[in-house]
Image 1 (cartoon, rainbow, N blue to C red):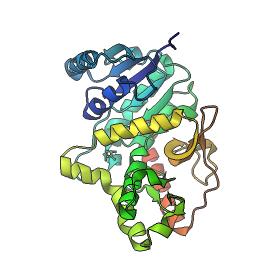
Image 2 (cartoon, protein in one colour; image 1 turned 120 degrees about the vertical axis):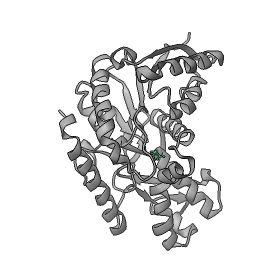
Image 3 (cartoon, rainbow, N blue to C red; image 1 turned 90 degrees about the horizontal axis):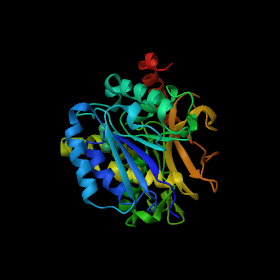
Length: 327
Ligand code: LMR
């Protein structure tokens, strides 16, 4: 007998990122061919375009795609969803920081948090991709008091993948040989890509890349600023690589494994000395029971400590800017 379909909500569904994401989800890549229903949300003015995407999804005749619900009212579209991928938000342009989007985007996540609280499955998992994703995630979770705050996440997988690719290239190895790259803090230019605990093969990164100046300098800056570099080059923000990171992130979240991945999680129970009311990226694994767990006791040397505190400071400042959206 077939398992029941998994209901997946995607916001910003008529946008660029979603166009790279939806077909991969619908092809069965995310839940190993389990039947699924897509719930697609976007603004009323782009619903005609969204209808076109729905047609294209139907035309793929994907075996696991059972139904597609399309609309602009989150109270209708989110009904019964078990996974919410909150992509929809105004993207940043050249020269902007992600936090510059807070005043426009914060409200979206207030409304969507309330709607999730009311109509989504009580067990829903929520991944925020729309920027600034950590603080948007905090807004959504605080507006959804009946949903477990440990089910809300912000995405730093794109940063993890970028850091992995840079290290692999510098070391002259394939990306599959690079492990345990941790991104600490905010998905912003203050994020902390931790090469100290990353492994290349079974060795510490510094044993393979014997160029501390590059690791602390160019590598760090490249990861922190890659999103801006892409905006400068493409004239718009990353889409396909971000969609790929969503697939990697959700796969890791749902797959029991000792493999460490980075994820923005609610800090209320963190074992790290960070403010208790932030969404903060930390190293995680997924247990045999299928629950994510923070990896504790990773030591911060002085270099990491100074930078992680800066990222925490930025997140506190972002929180100050949206106090009126936090009940
Ligand atoms: C990215 O990192 O590429 C995205 O968050 C988009 C952006 O604004 O940089």
